[in-house]
Amino acid sequence: MAPPAGRSAAVPAPAPRRRRLWAAAGLCLLLAAGAALRLLQAFPSYKYANDADSALSALCAFKVLRGHHPVFVSEVRIGSLVGFETAALFGVFGISRDSFALEAPLVGMLLLAAWYLFLRETLGPRLARLGLLFAAIPAPAFAFWTSLPTGYPETVMLCAAAFWLAARLAVGEGGLASAAGLGLVVGLGWWNSLQTLGCTVPALLWVGWRRPALLRRRGLLPLLAGGFLAGAFPWIAYNLHHPLASFQGNFTVEPVNSVAAAVDNARVFFVYDLPELVAGVGPLLEAPQRPPWPWLRVPVVATIAAAALFFFARRAPVRRRSPPAVAAAAVGTAGVVGAAADGDGASRGQRAVWPLCLLTVLAVLGLLVVSAAGARRGLTARYVLPLYLLVPVVMAVFLAACARRSRLLAGVLAALVLAFNLRGVFWPWTPARQGWASDARAEEQLLATLQRQGIGAVCGSYWDTYALNFLSRERIRGVPLEPETDQYWEGNRLPPSPVRLALVDRLPQPLAAWAARACLAGTTLEIPSRLPRYALFLPAVNPPPGETPHRMIDRLRRAYFRIGGPCGQP
Image 1 (cartoon, rainbow, N blue to C red):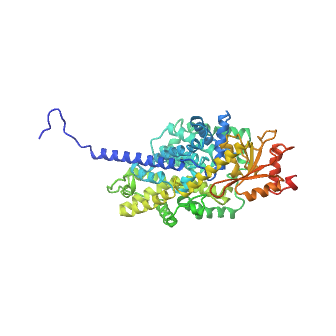
Image 2: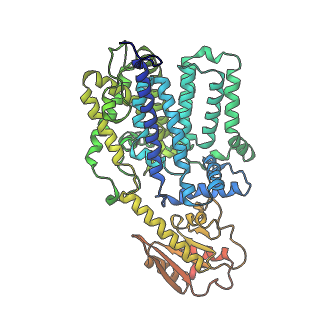
Image 3: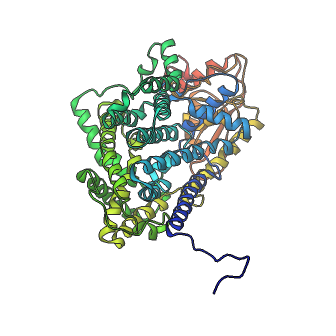
């Protein structure tokens, strides 16, 4: 029967269009989930596990707000990008923990966008959405280090942007604009952290190897070089004014002292760094705070190792057109199991990206093995963070190959890794986050006590004092006992006139013993919180007569480290 006059018959949307709409919706949902996860890791704001190191970015931002242009945020190793970003947030939202906490998730969202664009350029849309699952919900160690406002989020974001722009040139349709952008990103990475060399050098070599004719294109190399000079200009200007200061006393560029040390660095890389990066159960956490399900660590490491071996061993995971398969829905395990190859275009992209992945592994490993940074022991997985950018690549290719044989197997493997990653997130209700929130409240109580007592300077451990400079907006000087950790010279900025002083420690007994060695009489106050609590010592005669603040700090340091004669005298 014909439709009534004036009304048209409903025509169903073509199937390809419906698939594109579902794919776009799934992509938006994944990106939104990744953004939400990063925001939930930052808010409600709390005291970071390495709060003193994180406070360096806020102190750098204070310098920016005063009209200065600092080049580095930490010694001469970490560029001040994070400081300028934090200063912008302070200018818009005011100076607080909340505005400070916003910096890392914003950079994380830029990282996620650049990451997806790289995956799409090399794997095609379908596999890119599958890989995006492991970028939006990353491994706990990766999520932890990139949630801190210490420069690590910028480092990894710049590496991902370099990969994307290099892919535009190597396998995509990029031209002069992509070349200029790649140069700029490489230069910014050089300024922000030499750690980016593990990705930027392979990216440049990959472009040259894949598209040698492109390098002969008129204007491309000048734009590439010009972009680099623009991005690295602050670093270049500083090291011209202070000749090669970034290479002096910088453990990241110092070579190892022996072949045996290099071999041991390589051993630690494979035994600790890689397993911790992809399946760590909680950096800087005490045993009660670590998430359950530690038994999942072994199968997760095994799954990602199998994916990497499959990807690198086969070199070209998809050699011919695959039969049609159900596309991934981009959300949930049900979408994961249906992922298949994207056809010949995706196959070429996978073959093309193989050298980049291999070069990146070799570059990161090489830098770690020959550098004194690799000889450090402890939480060194942060030195190989850029390697995690490759995990979504190898997982997407591996799961797509598994799905062609058994969708159930692919779904189980994907669910295993994602469940582990989700369980390791520092959600607001986890014991670790609740503990850090309690620490923040205790620090606020400590600051309020200092303000009521009219204290102008606090002396104690770097980890107990340095964040107070940020929280008090430098109205109270937190002077660390270890002079080498006073990176913003708070001790040198004490006024020559007398200042009311306090001593701080985590426990009252060591604090009282320290005050006694310094021949100080006074009162010990305890700041209630979860253990370890803060303890505060207030001298009875305050400020001490006959001593400048600088001499008093020197005497306290001598008494603490038991240097010199009685009462910390030289």
